[in-house]
Image (tube, rainbow, N blue to C red; front, top):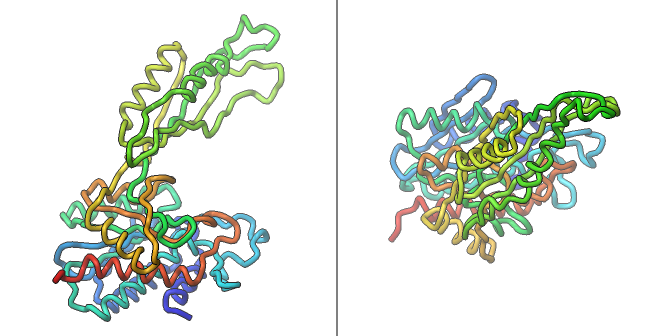
Length: 378
């Protein structure tokens, strides 16, 4: 059994359903402490976070990840128990294998080998580990970054272990993410009997043309790095439960995934202008999960491309597709941020799993990135 697989099994057997950590960070701190890392356990409200750093010089390369996992759903639906970490037919099964305890194990063993071979490397290495990525993400990475910023501790390069790969390890890495903006809209009408519509005002009917416009609006055309901004309705709630009552209100939740061609303020202004244009009686609240970020060509992207080509034998594709990640909290500090992890085909699913061979490959890629960035050039 490889060191990476052994550590992954130990992590997965801890049922750290968000925001629980269940001792994962203590385990990692012990491993990192033995390598000369200085560990800080940062607890904000009910969330455990670990900031661990080796060295006090620049540049600083940080591995970022999360020990919390999403709930399993009905465990009877799993072929393998979700926290047993069973190895079957070349795969490691369990909640968090791909998202993202497998990556954390690979990062840790990559550092162990790198430090053993190059104890006097240049710069510094760090780990930023939270247990609040799969939850509200309010007391995790964002709070650790605020803590570091307050003492002017800057990250130069950050490698996030989110499962980025599609068909083969490293075939896709995420060098950016779209922004995410959610609207909670309530349109008010006048409740009444369906047989007397002239005595009521149906808010669903009032909303319908507005919704049609929102769905069919071209918000932007995207650019070389980002697809066009998208609008999606995710929830509609209305009615009284009776079939003969015109509802008094309709609630709708919608989400924008937006590119760098626009911003939060511009989207909100366009939506509000449309609602006012149609003279709706409404209330609206907004939740902004994060602005888009992009890490263009530079030291980190170059190192990743070299590492994947040398270790795996094929090139990697840069992408900004997918959901949000904690990278959105790190990038605004000026750090170069890229996500590289195992295949994402089974994340959040029943029978989440990762190829055992892929774990070792990923660890080798991480080690090669370390060598590219933290060894002196000749």
